[in-house]
Structures are given as C-alpha cells and as structure tokens.
Length: 393
Image (cartoon, rainbow, N blue to C red):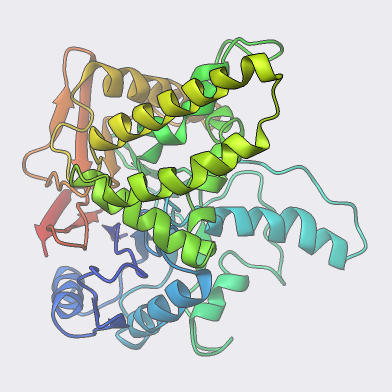
C-alpha cells in the first residue's frame, strides 16, 4: 500500500508555484509532481494522497476565491488518476475545512434529520494500517452504506458526484501504522505559540485542568485561532490591510501600522470616558500601547522559512506538550509509540535521507518536513510499509 504526502500549496496566495496569474497551472511544478508519483507507482494511482495542511489559504483570501483557484488542482488529480483516496489534514491557513466538517456532521447533518446537534469532537484521528494493507479507519466514526468515507461536501471540488476522488478529513493527526513503527503525519501549527497561546496562558486557571490533552490544544484555543486563522481572510478590505501590515512586519517595516495607529488610537481615546482628573492616564496608556505595538511589529520573526523552527528551548517545550498529548491519544488507539513525525508549516524541507532529531530530549524520534510550494522547495514524500523516501520539487 503506497502513500504520497505534500503540504503547504497555499491556493489563494499569489506566490504559490502551482498557480500562474492566480490560476492553477498544470504545467511546471504540477507536471513534476505528477511524473514523480507515476514513476513511484509504475503509472498507477497511490492508495492515499495525503494533503498535510495549508492546501488552501483562507487567511489571506476569501473562501470563494481560494476554492475557485484550488478546484482545478483537485480535478487534475482525478483526470491524471493519481490517487484512489485523499486524506486532508487541515493546517492553520485552512482549518476552516475542519470547522466546516464539525458543523456539517454535528449540527447541520443532525438538524436536517430532525435530531439534536451533538458536541464538537474538536479532533478526529485517522489510522492507515500499511502493514495489514487496511483502508483508512476513523475511530468513533460510523460508516454506513449511504455515507461512505469521503462522500460529503468536499466532493464538490470535483466536476460531478460520479467523477470524484473520496476526500476524508482528519485533524490534527494521521497515523501510519507499519510493521516496524508508527509515523505521525501532522501539519505542525500546534508547535507555534500563536495557535496554542490560550492553552498556555490559561492552563490550571480557575476550572481549567492542569494537564493538556490533544483535544484541549484545539478546543481551548478556538476563540483566538478562529480569528487569526481563517477569520482574517474574510474581512474584505480589512483583510488586505492586515495582510499588508503582516508582510511589512516581516521586513522590519512598520509604515502602514503607524498610519493605522495614528488614526485608530485617537478614536479609542474618544471612547474612553474617565473622570477629568484621570484623563491624562488614558493618553499615557494609549501612547505606551502604540510604542509597544510598533516595537513588537519591528521584531516579528516569521515561522515560515525559519531554519531554527523546533530548535530553541521554547519551541522544544511547546513540541513536548503536543507530543506527550499525542502519545496519550495513541495509547488509547492501541498504537505503538512513534519513531517518526512528518510535518509542514515551516516551509523548510527535511528530506527522507537527512532527518532531524531531538536527541537526547526525545530519543529515537526522526523529524521530516514537506517544505512548501511558495518561493521555497517542496518535498514530496512516499511512505509504504517498508520504506520512506522523498524527492524535491
């Protein structure tokens, strides 16, 4: 049983190498992707094509535009017969896919059947047993004759209900079970502070538990991540403004942010109603806020392209939280402790020949990375029961 894995195509971002003038381009990078997959399989489809997050970019573009750009890619996969089944693991730029699945299965699907909504699961593991050549298994998901895996709204990315590749969504982890080990496939955004900030700040506060489970890493951070992830891309001109500020901050430029603060802070001052003898304090506070915002923006370091991602103490600590929570989930699923983890997110490829490790912090755990399809190199991984290899595209 053969699998192929990529991530970070970022359909919706004009810099994606799979597009040209914001249109999907079936030549160039995609042509090489197709050739590598068919060479690997002997002109047959892989059993599973795993899309490891940030496939569509809803954080800088609207749902409509990002999906419109991505749809031809999925249709081309079908036309070229590259995969029998697609497993989609949402990342931070397309997590709304996972949110939509939860709404569809727990709220919309039940209400349309005159049933009460059910609680969100927050996470959904997936298991592919490569050693026994078993199909994808989604724990606690009922599969009946009418609703097979992959037979839901995402098939709308294809041309018709009779001409599609089944797409199953798991979040945040997919487990590849092999004869010799288990491999974790995850996007990797839960290793970055922006996506786990709430759980780090609130753990042990009031009635918040002291121990973080994998579900908690998603559930506790929903208010913040929903806003800074997909919510930002749906605000029209406000989205463009925030995107411009972010781009400039990565270049140590605060020009647009200064213009915004100069306009916004006086309006905030007007909204603050204090006693006359305290009026000066709000001015001092707002000015301090202005200086701090500019200082923080000028020091922003982007994870994307960061070669030291997961190498500093804070990143390692954050990864350990994620990893320990994942191991606990794996125990419940009766999976062996993992020996390899494949992620994306940072856009820095780590190929199959030269894995990174965290010895002696976590012995016997190899890290791989699928890179990205923007300005850098992407790494296409192939994994079966006996081997793991990759090629740069």
